[in-house]
Structures are given as C-alpha cells and as structure tokens.
Image (cartoon, rainbow, N blue to C red; front, side, top):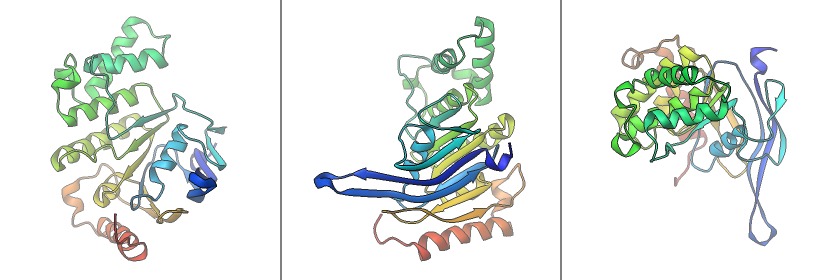
Length: 265
C-alpha cells in the first residue's frame, strides 16, 4: 500500500437535519489523501466543518455520503487504531495520572502481562515528562499537565492516527508552546499520523507537513492545501525569519482574511 493512500476521504458529504424537515449541509465534496506519518492541520473559520470532519474520521459520527478508508478498511465506527484528544482532556478525576493511562492500555491490550503493562505505561508517562506527577490526581496538576496526560493516554494504545481537536486552545501561550514542542518530539519518536484542528496560524505552520484550509460553511469544503516545506526538527525561534515559514503564514492569512473573510466569528 502506498503511503499516499494511507487514509482516504472520498467524496464526503455531511448533512444535519433541522426542524421543519429542513437540512443543514455542513461539508460537501471533501476529497483528501492523508499520508502515513505526516502531521496535517485543518484550519478555517468557526462553522467550516473542521470538527465534523474529525469526528467522522474518528468514527464518532457518520458521513451522509462518501467513504473514509484507513489501511484499506472502511471506517464505520470508533476503533483503537484511532485515538482522539479533545480540548477538555477528559481525565477521570478519581484516577491518578498513571492509572488514567493504565486504564486505556488495559482496555486495548488485555493480553499484556502485569510487567509489560507497567513498562508500557511508564514509557508514555516518561515520554511526556510526567514521572514526577504520575501518582497525582487530575485535580492536583495544571491544565498543561492534564493535556500531556491526555496525549500520553491516547498514544499509549499505539494508534495509527492521532486526532486532536484544538487540544491546546484553552491554554496560555507559554504552555501551548511547550506542548507543541512535546507533540513534535513525540511524533518523530512514535511515527504516527497526526490530524490537528486549530484556529492558530503559527501553530498550523510550525507543526504541519500540510495545512488543509476549509471554506466557510454551510457547504464547506477544502479550499486549498498548503505544503509546508520545512525540515524537522523545527525551531520556532529560527523559523520566524525563515522564507518558507513566512510564505506559508502569508498564504494562510490570505486565504482566511481575504479570500474567505468572515465579518463575525
């Protein structure tokens, strides 16, 4: 199988029913091939169908028309080969950091021995630099640390695709930058595909191999696909004066605020 045909969205439409027998066409005619081991950002104004697309790839919602195919298998519902990280980390407050990750691994990999389970959980606790906090409960750690636990928990089940719906949107700028660095480092280590929804132009360029720019809804679709030709690992400070970084940033600004400007968000 070609890496270019790893995850395919073919002729995707999504319609939501409204009162009075009316319908709302959220997304129309979305076609996209997502490569293995790449980071994709989906960006666009509110209401452009970003989360709708992500939920369909996750199997949390179904498309009205079209096919979503992962590794030559059609997606018809949730599965362990896809993990989702939302803006609200969804940690269980009565479990420690370690136990929140352990629970996910136990569910997906019941065949592991107790020592294999412990090694796997500890590996992902360490990967997000939370060894010092593994016995703490969610109520006793910061928002950024909670999101790191959410990322570790998602990655611990060894998904082929990590889906992230504005995972850093509620965090302050320094914490957000820290987690972006964590994500890039971890993705280079585990080599999976990451699809991230964001409103942040700099985040999209910094993280992504390609940026998917959505037109405005209703009847939103892919307007442009931007290739980000920047080598990895990436350093946010040196990128600020990089010609390719500036080109990509300007292309997204042009798309969002000239071609598809919105008066009200």
